[in-house]
Length: 199
Image (cartoon, rainbow, N blue to C red):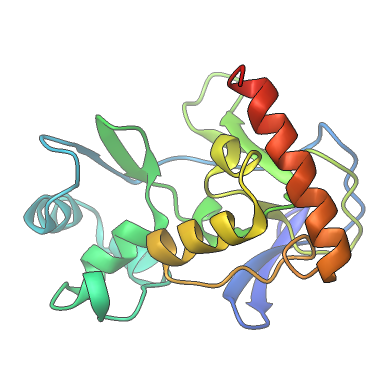
Protein backbone atom coordinates (compact mmCIF):
# COMPACT_ATOMS: atom_id res chain seq x y z
CA UNK A 1 0.00 0.00 0.00
CA UNK A 2 1.19 3.54 -0.79
CA UNK A 3 1.18 6.52 1.58
CA UNK A 4 -1.90 8.27 0.20
CA UNK A 5 -3.75 5.69 -1.88
CA UNK A 6 -4.61 2.10 -2.61
CA UNK A 7 -6.02 0.40 -5.69
CA UNK A 8 -9.15 -1.63 -5.09
CA UNK A 9 -12.49 -2.46 -6.76
CA UNK A 10 -14.85 0.45 -7.45
CA UNK A 11 -18.52 -0.54 -7.81
CA UNK A 12 -19.47 -0.65 -11.49
CA UNK A 13 -16.08 0.70 -12.62
CA UNK A 14 -13.54 -2.10 -12.24
CA UNK A 15 -10.63 -0.96 -10.09
CA UNK A 16 -10.13 2.56 -8.79
CA UNK A 17 -7.74 4.63 -6.68
CA UNK A 18 -8.91 5.35 -3.11
CA UNK A 19 -7.47 7.65 -0.46
CA UNK A 20 -6.05 5.78 2.55
CA UNK A 21 -6.00 8.97 4.65
CA UNK A 22 -7.43 12.48 4.46
CA UNK A 23 -5.76 14.45 1.66
CA UNK A 24 -5.69 18.25 1.58
CA UNK A 25 -5.92 20.34 -1.62
CA UNK A 26 -2.56 20.80 -3.34
CA UNK A 27 -1.15 17.51 -2.04
CA UNK A 28 0.49 15.19 -4.55
CA UNK A 29 -1.38 11.90 -4.23
CA UNK A 30 0.86 9.85 -6.51
CA UNK A 31 3.56 10.05 -9.15
CA UNK A 32 3.88 7.73 -12.13
CA UNK A 33 6.03 7.48 -15.24
CA UNK A 34 4.94 6.46 -18.74
CA UNK A 35 5.91 2.90 -19.66
CA UNK A 36 4.92 3.12 -23.33
CA UNK A 37 4.82 6.04 -25.76
CA UNK A 38 3.64 6.14 -29.35
CA UNK A 39 4.39 9.03 -31.69
CA UNK A 40 1.39 9.33 -33.99
CA UNK A 41 1.68 9.51 -37.75
CA UNK A 42 -2.06 10.14 -38.15
CA UNK A 43 -5.00 11.46 -36.12
CA UNK A 44 -5.71 8.07 -34.53
CA UNK A 45 -3.11 5.58 -33.36
CA UNK A 46 -3.00 2.49 -35.60
CA UNK A 47 -3.43 -0.97 -34.09
CA UNK A 48 -0.04 -2.10 -35.43
CA UNK A 49 1.69 0.89 -33.76
CA UNK A 50 0.24 -0.15 -30.39
CA UNK A 51 1.38 -3.76 -30.87
CA UNK A 52 4.92 -2.75 -31.92
CA UNK A 53 5.33 -0.40 -28.95
CA UNK A 54 3.97 -3.09 -26.60
CA UNK A 55 6.42 -5.69 -27.98
CA UNK A 56 9.34 -3.46 -26.96
CA UNK A 57 8.30 -3.41 -23.28
CA UNK A 58 9.64 -5.59 -20.49
CA UNK A 59 7.43 -8.51 -19.44
CA UNK A 60 6.65 -6.70 -16.15
CA UNK A 61 5.42 -3.58 -17.97
CA UNK A 62 3.45 -5.69 -20.44
CA UNK A 63 1.63 -7.33 -17.52
CA UNK A 64 0.86 -3.88 -16.01
CA UNK A 65 -0.77 -2.74 -19.24
CA UNK A 66 -2.68 -5.95 -19.90
CA UNK A 67 -4.22 -5.66 -16.43
CA UNK A 68 -5.94 -2.36 -17.35
CA UNK A 69 -9.57 -2.03 -18.43
CA UNK A 70 -10.57 -2.62 -22.06
CA UNK A 71 -13.91 -1.67 -23.56
CA UNK A 72 -16.09 -4.34 -25.12
CA UNK A 73 -15.23 -5.37 -28.69
CA UNK A 74 -18.38 -3.97 -30.30
CA UNK A 75 -19.47 -0.85 -32.15
CA UNK A 76 -16.41 1.21 -33.09
CA UNK A 77 -14.21 -1.38 -31.32
CA UNK A 78 -15.53 -4.38 -33.29
CA UNK A 79 -12.64 -6.52 -34.50
CA UNK A 80 -10.05 -4.61 -32.46
CA UNK A 81 -7.58 -6.46 -30.24
CA UNK A 82 -7.79 -6.27 -26.45
CA UNK A 83 -4.42 -4.48 -26.42
CA UNK A 84 -5.69 -1.80 -28.82
CA UNK A 85 -8.85 -1.33 -26.72
CA UNK A 86 -6.74 -1.02 -23.55
CA UNK A 87 -4.65 1.67 -25.23
CA UNK A 88 -7.71 3.53 -26.52
CA UNK A 89 -9.33 3.58 -23.05
CA UNK A 90 -6.23 4.35 -20.97
CA UNK A 91 -3.73 6.38 -23.00
CA UNK A 92 -2.94 10.01 -22.26
CA UNK A 93 -1.44 12.54 -24.62
CA UNK A 94 -1.94 15.14 -27.25
CA UNK A 95 -2.43 14.94 -31.00
CA UNK A 96 1.20 14.12 -31.80
CA UNK A 97 1.76 11.32 -29.27
CA UNK A 98 0.09 9.07 -26.72
CA UNK A 99 1.53 7.40 -23.65
CA UNK A 100 0.49 4.80 -21.09
CA UNK A 101 0.85 5.53 -17.36
CA UNK A 102 -0.40 2.37 -15.55
CA UNK A 103 -1.14 3.61 -12.03
CA UNK A 104 -2.74 6.87 -13.14
CA UNK A 105 -4.86 4.89 -15.62
CA UNK A 106 -6.51 3.24 -12.60
CA UNK A 107 -8.12 6.57 -11.65
CA UNK A 108 -11.76 6.71 -12.72
CA UNK A 109 -13.61 9.65 -14.25
CA UNK A 110 -15.98 12.02 -12.49
CA UNK A 111 -17.32 15.27 -13.96
CA UNK A 112 -17.00 16.65 -10.40
CA UNK A 113 -13.32 15.68 -10.14
CA UNK A 114 -11.27 15.58 -6.94
CA UNK A 115 -7.80 15.64 -8.56
CA UNK A 116 -5.94 16.72 -11.67
CA UNK A 117 -2.89 15.45 -13.53
CA UNK A 118 0.20 17.64 -13.93
CA UNK A 119 3.88 17.27 -14.71
CA UNK A 120 5.51 15.77 -11.62
CA UNK A 121 7.91 18.10 -9.78
CA UNK A 122 11.51 17.05 -9.24
CA UNK A 123 14.19 15.52 -11.39
CA UNK A 124 12.43 12.37 -12.60
CA UNK A 125 10.15 12.74 -15.61
CA UNK A 126 6.57 11.69 -15.24
CA UNK A 127 3.17 12.81 -14.11
CA UNK A 128 1.73 13.65 -10.73
CA UNK A 129 -1.84 13.51 -9.48
CA UNK A 130 -2.67 16.53 -7.31
CA UNK A 131 -5.71 16.91 -5.05
CA UNK A 132 -8.00 19.75 -6.16
CA UNK A 133 -10.24 19.63 -3.09
CA UNK A 134 -10.25 17.84 0.27
CA UNK A 135 -10.47 14.06 -0.17
CA UNK A 136 -11.63 12.00 2.81
CA UNK A 137 -10.03 8.73 3.86
CA UNK A 138 -11.77 5.95 1.93
CA UNK A 139 -13.06 8.31 -0.80
CA UNK A 140 -12.34 7.45 -4.42
CA UNK A 141 -9.90 9.78 -6.21
CA UNK A 142 -11.32 10.97 -9.53
CA UNK A 143 -10.11 12.94 -12.53
CA UNK A 144 -11.95 14.32 -15.56
CA UNK A 145 -11.07 12.48 -18.77
CA UNK A 146 -11.81 15.61 -20.82
CA UNK A 147 -11.06 18.19 -18.15
CA UNK A 148 -11.15 21.54 -19.95
CA UNK A 149 -13.91 20.60 -22.36
CA UNK A 150 -16.32 19.05 -19.85
CA UNK A 151 -16.45 22.20 -17.71
CA UNK A 152 -18.54 23.93 -20.36
CA UNK A 153 -20.81 21.05 -21.42
CA UNK A 154 -24.31 20.31 -20.17
CA UNK A 155 -25.10 16.96 -18.56
CA UNK A 156 -26.48 15.36 -21.73
CA UNK A 157 -23.52 16.66 -23.78
CA UNK A 158 -21.05 15.22 -21.24
CA UNK A 159 -22.85 11.88 -21.17
CA UNK A 160 -22.91 11.66 -24.98
CA UNK A 161 -19.20 12.53 -25.25
CA UNK A 162 -18.13 10.05 -22.56
CA UNK A 163 -20.33 7.31 -24.00
CA UNK A 164 -18.96 7.88 -27.51
CA UNK A 165 -15.30 8.24 -26.49
CA UNK A 166 -15.01 5.77 -23.62
CA UNK A 167 -18.12 3.60 -23.78
CA UNK A 168 -19.57 4.31 -20.33
CA UNK A 169 -22.40 6.29 -18.82
CA UNK A 170 -21.14 8.67 -16.14
CA UNK A 171 -22.75 8.18 -12.74
CA UNK A 172 -20.76 10.72 -10.72
CA UNK A 173 -22.57 12.84 -8.11
CA UNK A 174 -22.83 15.74 -10.56
CA UNK A 175 -24.49 13.63 -13.25
CA UNK A 176 -26.89 12.08 -10.72
CA UNK A 177 -28.37 15.32 -9.37
CA UNK A 178 -32.16 15.60 -9.40
CA UNK A 179 -33.68 17.24 -12.48
CA UNK A 180 -34.03 20.70 -10.89
CA UNK A 181 -30.43 20.82 -9.68
CA UNK A 182 -29.22 19.42 -13.00
CA UNK A 183 -31.04 22.19 -14.86
CA UNK A 184 -29.39 24.83 -12.65
CA UNK A 185 -25.87 23.40 -13.17
CA UNK A 186 -26.49 23.08 -16.92
CA UNK A 187 -27.54 26.75 -17.08
CA UNK A 188 -24.39 27.75 -15.20
CA UNK A 189 -22.27 25.76 -17.64
CA UNK A 190 -23.96 27.44 -20.61
CA UNK A 191 -23.10 30.82 -19.07
CA UNK A 192 -19.50 29.73 -18.47
CA UNK A 193 -19.28 28.54 -22.07
CA UNK A 194 -20.59 31.89 -23.31
CA UNK A 195 -18.08 33.81 -21.21
CA UNK A 196 -15.26 31.42 -22.11
CA UNK A 197 -15.78 31.78 -25.86
CA UNK A 198 -16.98 35.39 -25.79
CA UNK A 199 -20.49 34.62 -27.03
